[in-house]
Image 1 (cartoon, one colour):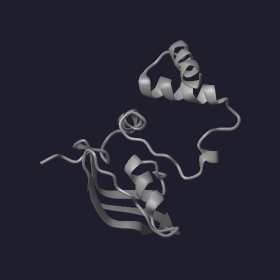
Image 2 (spheres, one colour):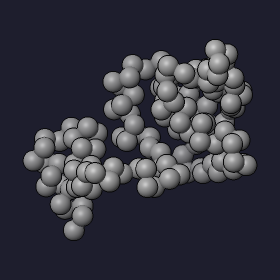
Image 3 (cartoon, one colour):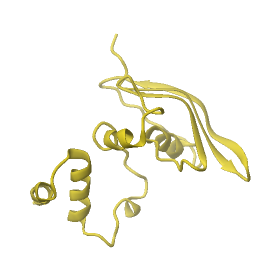
Image 4 (cartoon, one colour):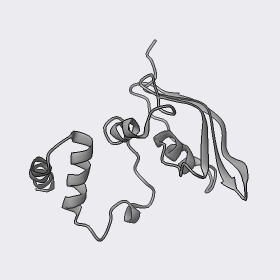
Length: 138
């Protein structure tokens, strides 16, 4: 039997509202195995984006609480230090945000933003990242 690449068990994500924790996603569980695709569908406000943000650990830590288990290739993501989670994002798991206009900073060049991602996620030097960025954009 093939092990799941991503295993989400009893995921509950809550947000603090007026001093109380309000669950937005409750007890969600699923596995994604190699060669499988999972489509997450639902009405606006049903928790699709919150689920994805929770898996990526991108919800605001001061006003959100993620409970349950999220394992990527057997590694528990919810207990990883932030620095280790930053290395996993973009290298082992990624998210395409709904609103593409907010994905890139309009004040910075696209080249700069691609190079920053390469430096952070591929451990490249600035000059290596700039050369790779030029190659990618050609």
